[in-house]
Image 1 (tube, rainbow, N blue to C red):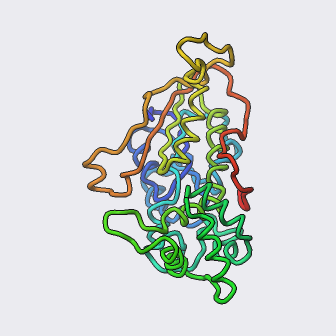
Image 2 (image 1 turned 45 degrees about the vertical axis):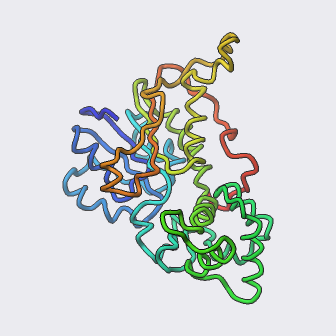
Image 3 (image 1 turned 60 degrees about the vertical axis):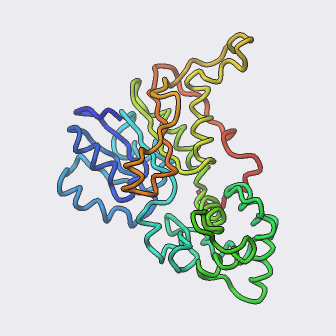
Length: 313
């Protein structure tokens, strides 16, 4: 992010405040902290005591960052950072229903508004459930799991994370040592769908492009292939990497590059970081710097094919 004195930076996924604290400690700058989870800003109190008005808390979705930043009195910023997916604090709270490792209600809503996972599983047709699991979880046995959910709810309501995890294990088999839990992909898929996480990512990337100063930086940490694919495809044309389909063909004439790459490849966590924080093992960082070229037109083409229409935004 290269924080500088006087700069303004957007932490689009405030969570427990780790990124914001690091930026504020590095330079005499301002951080606009965005989070859709209303409970997240309980972690902001110690930071507000330490940094005062240099930390500005904005409740909402980072896909709406242009509007949120404007309400704080800014039109452009020097950097945007996004750390995608569910936060560690949300995973560790059983009552939020994000994790099959802790029994809790089937909720999974980041903002605590809109349809819950329980309501989705109670009402969705098998075809919709299968599409959600296949597209957002890349679950090969999506239709078998969807049928099992529909059959189960006919005789017993699915209200707990442990019930859903047991049902999935009944289809896929029991957990094996040193392998991902069989319910991992399905829980991921339901969470992504309910919170429109990929749609939010597309909106957030495009909003960041609009509000970044020339030389401003966009840094995005992803945790699974769907997210990383969207970020990679977003940067490709905007950094000029998608301009030549083959080395034997001429460049395609199009818009000027709106970003320059800071690294041609994603950056992965080092072994010592993974040892200290195992959840970093699947993290990928991609970052680029804004140029003086105009922002590209907004598009929804970055969304996965066959993506079911989201219930929340």
